[in-house]
Length: 212
Image (cartoon, rainbow, N blue to C red; front, side, top):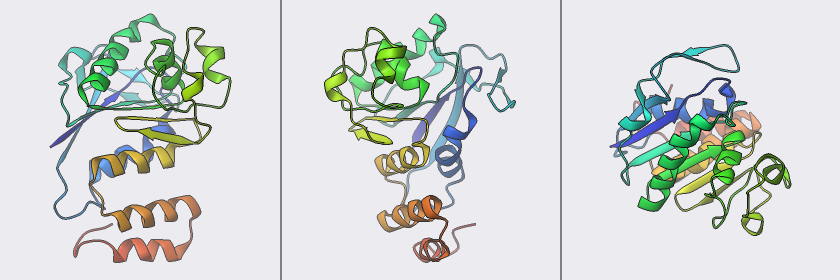
């Protein structure tokens, strides 16, 4: 079973997590033999956090509750509050994940937090455009590993800019192997274009009785 830990913090950018957590939590397009998913929200404390969209989230657990294993995934969304030094605890945990082979997935402002912590210095990654990481994270030294794409997967590190959430979701789902390859392609084609033929192609890839 995969455990997906979703770090939640004040001003969290709601839209960046939408595609990936809804598909992983619902399992509506999973292949027949896909591993089960447990999705947990993680906070600095168990006090409620308020997202950028005004939603209130009550964390399921705290950082010390995170179990690091090859079947653990840490999702780090963008937010306007990543410069709070208290988030250093989850960045330390991200370093543990990367060292152990567990998967870290960061988008938008969370990539700057990883950069400031030195976790992007030697790994292929992306963010909100060339120069963004230098501007936000003065200690960043990973310029030669920066790739100017919406989302970049480098083994167990998957990073994206603020407009790359859909491709980021695709790469995370691919990493976990919970969709059939043709299902994932049809899913991505449909949600990136809205064309009805891709929706019908998606439905045709699903096991009998699956899909909503």
